[in-house]
Amino acid sequence: MVKSMTSFGRASSEEGNKFLFSVEMKSVNSRYLDLNVRLPKSIISLEEEIRRLINSKLSRGKVDVFINQKSYSSGDGIAKLNLRLAESYYNCLREIEENLNIKNDITATQIARFPDVITIIEEEDSIDEIWKVIKPLINSSLEMMNNMRIIEGEKLKEDILQKLIEIESLVHNIENIAYTVPIAYKKKLEVKLKDLLEGIEIDEVRIAQEIAIIADKSAVDEEITRLKSHLNQMRKTFKEDGQIGRKLDFIIQEMNREANTIASKSNDMNMTNYVINIKNLIEKIREQSQNIE
Image (cartoon, rainbow, N blue to C red; front, side, top):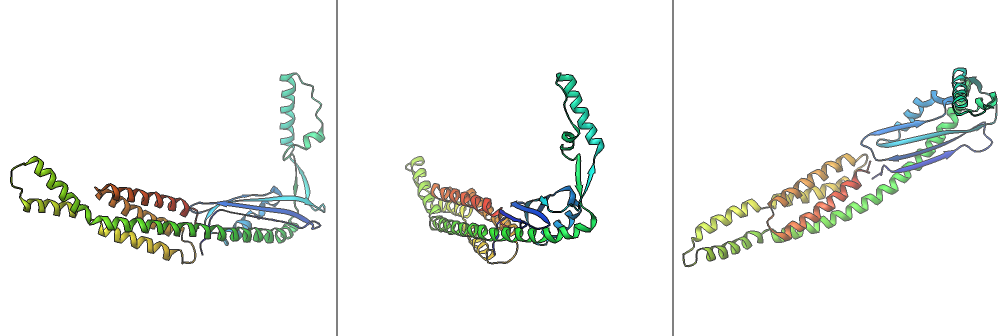
């Protein structure tokens, strides 16, 4: 099953519960699993558990996790004062007063409202209860993300498969004209030599040798065969289970390599245009495959 790495998930506690939390997750493409977890300081001890849970469900992607504490219905937490921080806030306000000649009417209540001056620390025996609330929320968010990844992955798959058909058609066009290149070159060479050596007999053997050399240098049969093989391999890869993104990256590199080789051998304008279109489609496939898990 093809999965995208772009997804979003959200879940919240039901009102009336002792602990009210909301969980939001969003992910974008990344070579590896890159987790960024943001949560209230009161439950910082749960970060490792949260990371282990997400790691067990996701394999790739840059994932941002936001856990917000909405409110508490009971006062099980303990208020803790950061007096040094409060003094620092107060000193800053005094400095503003002295330098800007502004009256300082700050109160203890106002200082207490500044970030992290007073924090709530949960009692140890409530952390397990909190985890029982947060864990299903994370699982629900992950399930929503997984469903979105599947939907987006199928869309990417369909689009890429359509582009493979277009590339196949262009390869077929190249195949049809590849054998005509030496023939066209022979005609051009004969015309040019007649103009240059008017009245002098042309050595047909030498011309045949030149044609053979050009035909050998411009032959793209092997490249076409390998390119077709890569197209088939990519189709087979889409039928595999698990992570296929890295394998697709490798196949795309090989497809691009064969297209470049055909371009370097081409001395026909039509063939060159076909190769340019192939490379353009390969680049579009590469951009889309980077978002596949």
